[in-house]
Length: 150
Image (cartoon, rainbow, N blue to C red; front, side, top):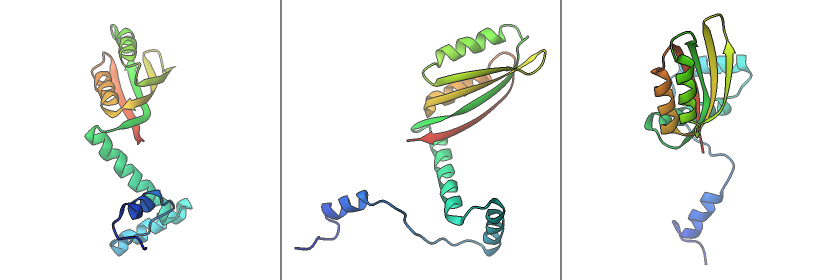
């Protein structure tokens, strides 16, 4: 007996299938030329670049929606001479120790310090950390690079 279309056996086979799926897209010719030109300079191919773009698109969506797990780095520049700045940042890091893996502290100059905070955890929790850091005393700049992980 053959498999019926849409049967459980067929669905199981599809979910176990690995490899690649080919699909077509419609793109303006000038965009394709510009894209291919850059890929040639970078020594990449279309498939790999499209996969990277798709992953970035998904990661940014998950970040915006606050769904899932993430990992990344948060860079903070602050004036350590601001009253209680260091103590506040240290307390904050202890409050978020479930999302912080590591912290690298760098003395930039006489007044400014830079911290690179490695994070991993629920997206909402990491967002909470970043929002709290932005409100910190003496904080001058914050930049983060976060990717979603499964």
